[in-house]
Image 1 (cartoon, rainbow over the protein chains, first blue to last red):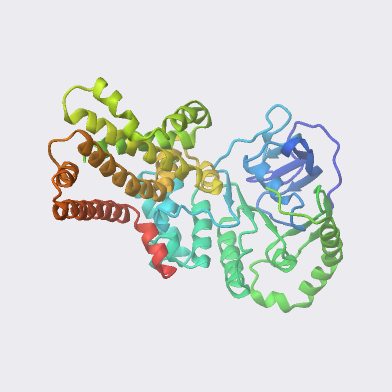
Image 2: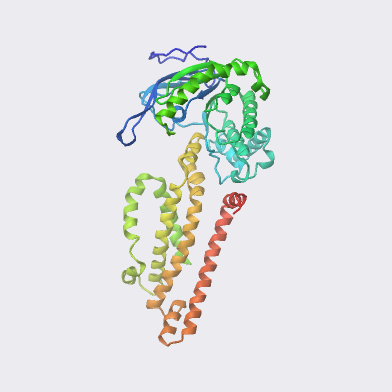
Length: 291
Length: 193
């Protein structure tokens, strides 16, 4: 599925698979203006993400991928372009800042579980404040979901008391309990050691297989991207544009044995040159993490 | 004690609002910061004029002193909360009042309690100072009185008693803080503190 640059100004339904959680990013540009120096973080980026797809975004640090996520989530306004979620306009020329909402849940890089609430309270928070479930119903549902994720024993503990792997899994549960259309993950496993990471991957895949939520996952790690994703989008260094898209046609459910397969190796090779090229450019430009 | 309660009751909400709402802060903060450095003792004459009776001016002074400390700490507490928590709360569908009660208040708690420990000391300090100047009783008075009649032993005794009382009340505040912030205690414990 090749993605062509679209210069269209259609306001009709996106060409991506209609359903739940299809994202259509059209000619999106984001320009920051810190201290009057215009910094273009995203440059005319277009991308179609099908409903239920796991879309991995790979690129060097500071290239603007987090910015794109922030725009989709409603943390930053875009400057030009439009983003559609299914058939609804999220943000565009008339409405540059998308509303934050439970249909697009974010899992943050350094973890944002509320430290003053126990895991189960964190998870139950979403449905409770949205008024979808009563407090006790929310707690029951939270307990069930935590138990599915293997966290029943630590459900009543605080985030500061459990390991980072458990905390991160709980954060994903906290997102999923709201039945979002899209899960936005911003390098969630960046700060973890390789062993914990591989467990996290399997946990995520397992949760994905159950819920089939659209996933927008930012990472540096190409192997992680290929292992988890349906498509890997390689972004250029700042300002971000799509450079190369690699389809990962490996059937699900996947497990870690995939990592040593020939198919996997070939996919890594396909994407590696592109990634490496951009990494060098970024390094030479002395990129720092933006946003 | 009353002064402390009053100061906390006033100072904490004020500080929280200043931390939370940019606009509110732009109005309130300059006023606060100009008033804050005025030494408490400088307020004494004004207090005596404004409030009749004997106890009330002292109450006012002690409250004032505590209030400044508490509100500043509360404000800093809110500002210390990581942006991610606000974003997470927004994603999860919180309305503004949810954010206030579930993010702003608990997040600022550690700072607030540090402030409270300081402010209770400040309240004591103002109380004693006021007693020394214009009192008829109390430990502050005792210190001055003993000094006047050269009974140094009782003077020092009064000082030590003040120290104990101060320590006691600070400890109570700390204890209260730890009760309310179980999450922090446990997290710190895991780090080996």
